[in-house]
Structure formats: C-alpha cells, structure tokens
Image 1 (tube, rainbow, N blue to C red):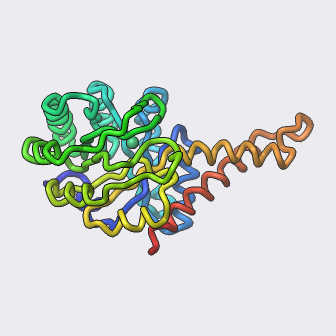
Image 2 (cartoon, rainbow, N blue to C red; image 1 turned 90 degrees about the vertical axis):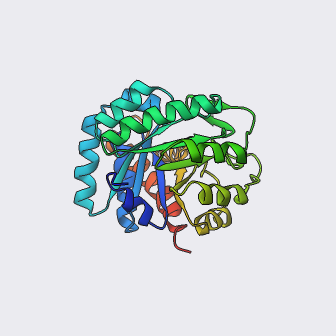
Image 3 (spheres, helix red, strand yellow; image 1 turned 180 degrees about the vertical axis):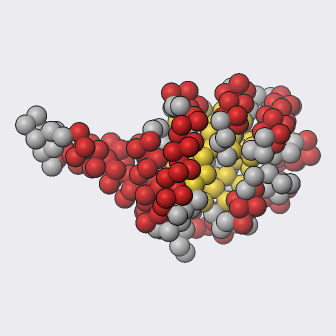
Length: 277
Ligand SMILES: [Zn+2]
C-alpha cells in the first residue's frame, strides 16, 4: 500500500483526533499540539464540512501546522454521503470515513469498497465502521448500543480493503452517563483480523486507564474526541462571562475569543498528556 502518509499513521504510537468547526478551533487544537510537541488529527462531521470551505481550510491547516513545526492530519468523519466524501477527497483532505454502519453488512461492504476505490485513486486514506456507536453526535443518533459481531468483522476483513477501521466495542458518542463497559478483547480481535490502524470513537470522558489500555493494544492508532472540544468552547464563554468580559462597556470580541482559545488549548493539552504513559 503506497497511500499518502499511510506509513506515517502506522508508525505513530497513537494520535488523538479532535473535532473542529472553523479556523479558530483548528488553530487552538494545533497550538495545543505544538505546545505538547505532538502531531495531531483535526476532523469534522459532515454537517460542519458542508458549512466549511474545504479547500481554504485545508490550505490554512497545512500552512499553519508547517509554521508550528507539527504534522496535522485532516479527516472527514462519519460520512454517509458518497458525493460529500468524494468532495473531501478532491479537496485534498488526508482521510475520509465512510460510515455504512447503519446499513446491512453486505451493503456496507459494497459502499465501503466504492468509497475506498475513489479515495485510493487519489492517494487518500479510507476509514470504515462495523457496528454502531451508541449516543449522539451532531447528525448521528444511535439509541441502542450495537457491539460489532465477530463474524461481521471476519466478513469485512475478507471483502474490503480499508486503511483504518472503527468497530463498536462498547464505546459511545457524547458523554458517558456511566463508565462504559469496553470490550477490549473485540479491539484485539479486530486488530488481529484487519491489520490496519484501529480508530477509537467516543474518546470524550474515557478514563486515563481506558485510554492507556487501548493504546497498549497494538494497532490502536487514533482516538477521537469531539464532545469535549465543544464543551471547552462553552467553558471559554463561561470564563469570559465570569471575568466580566461580556459586560457591554468592557466587551471586546477578541478577549472572548482568547478565553475560548485558552479553554480549548487546555482541554487538548490534557488529552495529549494522556499519551505519555
Ligand atoms: Zn465517531
């Protein structure tokens, strides 16, 4: 396999991927990564992708991360729309996820292969998903946890050629209401069957112990954090209000932006420190 930077991903110990929604949130995540001297993945949901200008943000992220001296990967997450996925590939994003997890398995395989074929023709990596993650994340809402079945993993491994794999193993989107029961054995089973980087969705609120254990499994290369980035943004606004910055006579947009930036940096740094175990 000679896809762009595939070996870079494989050779990393493990990377965190943070959801972003504009230039400012992207900058905050990259600033945090630079201060921790780590590389990082930025990703968007599909509804954010549709609001962004995918080529200018691609160019900005490349320029800014070069300036910081880190490597930043740009990923489209949970895409169910083939046209949008092709657009991200054409816009030079580094990787795209085709999410066929809600489909019947053979349909998921068929469309995953279609997405992979197009992505590979442009040297872009493709992530696929087996089993559905409980919880809500923007346009995704799954009420029943569906742990991936081993026979589905076997079938997928024989019939697809993907570069990253996400499997439902007890993880969930959004915030965990109780500590999740994570099926680490299923992660190990998958990485043995499908020898490509394994992606952990639902990193928000996962304990250090869970993160450490997941990272110790050979093949776990990407851990996604979305909800906590948005909550950090919210915390920044609260901090601005608590500091009196929202009072009309003191209000300066840039001062509020600074509080938001600092809150996101603080969250991202705390996550990246989890890599040092
Ligand atoms: Zn996800």
